Each structure stands twice: as C-alpha cells, then as structure tokens.
Length: 299
Image (cartoon, rainbow, N blue to C red; front, side, top):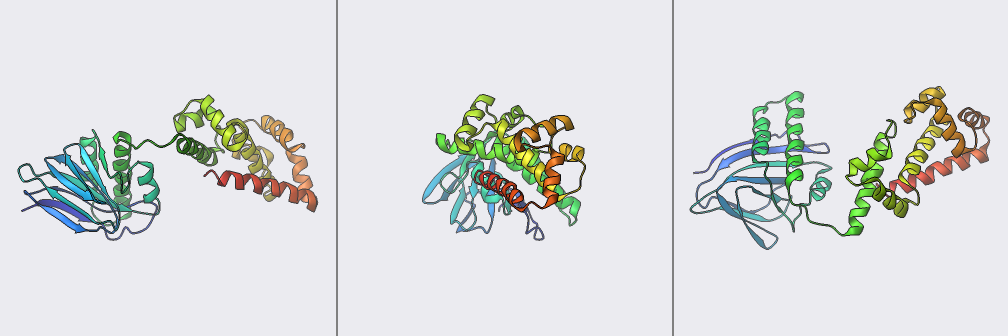
C-alpha cells in the first residue's frame, strides 16, 4: 500500500500564485494514477526509485533527480516501477500568474520534464509547507512563500528549452522595461537594469535601440520626466518631492533634465498647466499617452 502524507488547502483559491496541495509519498510497485486529469498545476519531483510518466502521447522514464509537470486539465498517467518504485514529493498550485511563470521556467505540455540538483532544498520547502498546515494568514503567507521558493529552486537548476534569438531579445527588452517601470522612483542606473536581466550594458543598448528607437538611458530619463510632468500637473507636491519620487536625489539635476526635455523648468511647466492652455496641455498629455502606449507594447 502507498505510504503518503498529503495536505490540501481548500481556502486558498485566489491570487497571482497560491498553493492547492502538497505531499510526499513512498509508493508500492506499480502504484499508478490515471489516465486522469488534475484541476490545477502539479509538479512531482522524484527523491528515489523510478517510474514512468505519460502525457501528450509521449512517455518519460524518470528516476531520482528528475521531476515532471502536470498542467491543468491534461490527461496524464504515471506509474511506479515494479522493482524500484519511486518516492516523490509534489506541489499543486494555481493563480493568475501560474501560466506565465511556468512558461518562463521552460516547462510546458511538450516539455514537461526537468532535472534538478536541489533535492534537499525542494524537500525542505515541501516539509515546511506541511508543518504550517493550519488556517490563518500567517501560515497561508508562509506556505505561499515556500511555493515561490520551490518554483525558484526548479527554475534555478532546471534545463530550459532554448528559444530563438528574436524571442530572447524581446524577452530581455520586456524584462528591462518592467524593471524600469517598477523601479524608476529609485536611483537606479542602466547597469542595474543590465544586471537584472543578466546581460551586459552594451548588448542592452543594442536591444533597446532596435526595439524602442532609443537607448536604455534615454528610455529611463524619458519615463522619469514624463512621470514628473504628470505629478506637476495633477498634484501640488513640492518640486523637490517630485524629483525624489521620480528617482532624482538632486533637485538641481532634476530641474536641468526636465528643462532639457520639456524646454521649460518644472515650475514654469506647472504654471502653464495651471493657466489652462488647452492646446499645450493636450500636446503634453498626448506625448505622455503615446509614450506609455509604446512602453505597454513591450511589457
């Protein structure tokens, strides 16, 4: 008989990524599941022994150090070996970001198998989920935190299918843009963006010139100044506060950059907006909207 320890968390049904269930199992010879489907994502990881996993018309023989993905609503079958049945752990999860995260990890219906040398860390993450198994926001946050850790360990060591050069370039630009949009308020530099997407600065420059028609530095500066223009128009915040809110630690540097791009000082821009000069206001708002539209195309 299979010896399993399994938990289901029925209350966790919403969010960008949340845990549905987890467990560990030492199976008997020929212990199997299916052919059947699961309602959410499930990742199994083999701790010892071996078995076979079938999905999408393909069969995979798996042993210690390998795992497999079961996507939602896909017919699967898996079975333990007769002589050396496997022991495995599993984690079931879902959420609005689950599809995107799984794809980014390189896992899919046609590429459901991965290898990892993080056996100890993966086991510890699942055991921690099971130890914090009672109702309450603290334990729910703990379990979902361990779910993020579990997936990051797989992403760190799993083989990811190579993509074409164009796909990789688009991905670098998209991630760089997201980083800038999330961190423009901090004193980041282009080197920080390049480090985040794991490419050198010169290559990032080339990708931005091709995709955005401007350098990463120009993109960062333009986004900051356009955001500052919005704040000048829509709030009564002091110019020094707006400068800090847009990543400028020195108000004089901010004023110089703003004047260079908008052809007037921040205080003059605010006065122009307050005068209600419709034509000029519409031009600036259109400029901001066009720029944001361009940014959104690469998110």
